[in-house]
Image 1 (tube, rainbow, N blue to C red):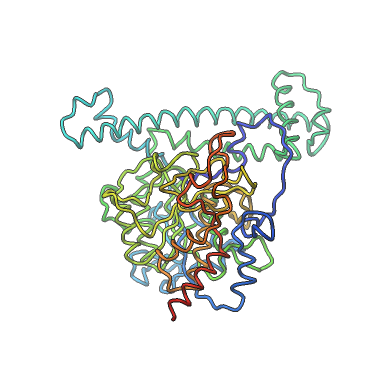
Image 2 (cartoon, rainbow, N blue to C red):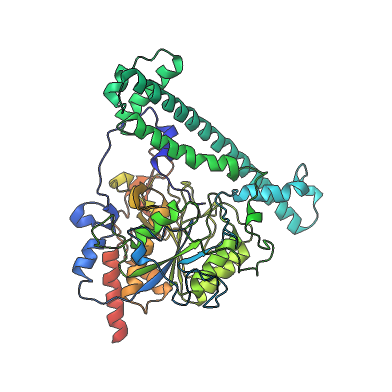
Length: 539
């Protein structure tokens, strides 16, 4: 699930809290802790001081996500273009099994051009599958080990589905109530006051006579004072974002009667069925993937928009993540497609609590491992310990061994000291390899847009960009070497220091207990270490 934490997603918890907005540079994730006093990865300093006279090799980074707007002004020049394919001729020119895959592939559509946008949560799919056999039964009624395990899976999935259904319905109803109420208030205030925009001063003058209008006026004033918008139009736009973000979870995510897979038309139960989908690697809603792609490699120093972390990278767009939980089959095929078509690093900013077919994903990860491809995976945004609550896909295989080419990334805030770790970030002493900037990251959005978004989904492409720089300037590095460099070169600024534990208000925990080594990713230090390794190898 590509959960992005834009401001509207936490709106319900802070509607009445007035806060003074704190500014931070739009490009904070590229800045330097020493020179700029913010915990970025030192991109600008690294290019200026360490890489200015070095040559790089173009590498391909696969963005496995919701799709990428490959025509975006800041991305079009960094998109991978399949050299063996002729655009639009309806022929599989390079005979890779995918027709007209110019910038990548879409595993969430069919050959007629129809696409899946909204999907179930995995717990919903599991409940729908297992309910006929296990509902109303007890574990004692089943004899085999496999049935008992499946019964427990059903119980767990049903509990999760019920919890999510209640949570999303409650949040949606609250946002819907305020969104509709604020829209009505805005219309009435404009008519009564004869103004085009309702700012705080105008709203104070509005004579609210009805009970609902009085309530909405109070909320509107508090939200504007709290920095949620300068006018009611701004607030309504943000609320609409929350409305649009939550509605698919009601219509699709937890809806047992909704199953869009027939649109794709594949044999879903056949793991060997790989050649389905269409070349529309932008898809119907590519906000998430476009934002991720920009963080990794938006064109640097072109005078527009923003600068990505990596300069000599081509982005391959592989659409496998819907609005809802991704399917294991699509993830596995997306990994294989990207590997087979030349990607050496894959960004996977998605995850879920349950796995439908873990083996098929494990096999794809092993395939990538055998081909020397590094996988960068988001740790997740549920502020839980993923040593305990598995966040799929995961680096640990069913046999207990771990993939050596797989990294899990937690999120950092730009706020210093005790608030350094993002409040939403998952963590895990055994599982999370590194923490990376992931709060209020400014990046590309569809149709030449730019916007802040937060999540481990944003932290991962920052780390992926750092890995891509290493691979570009030191192309002989293996995934295992890059992983080692990123971990060992990470800054230990907060090691031994206490920070606020994600998901709590003020519970303190030592930073190194949240991840493997208490490290914050640093491109500057990683390049220095890679250079030393390179010189050592030459001698």
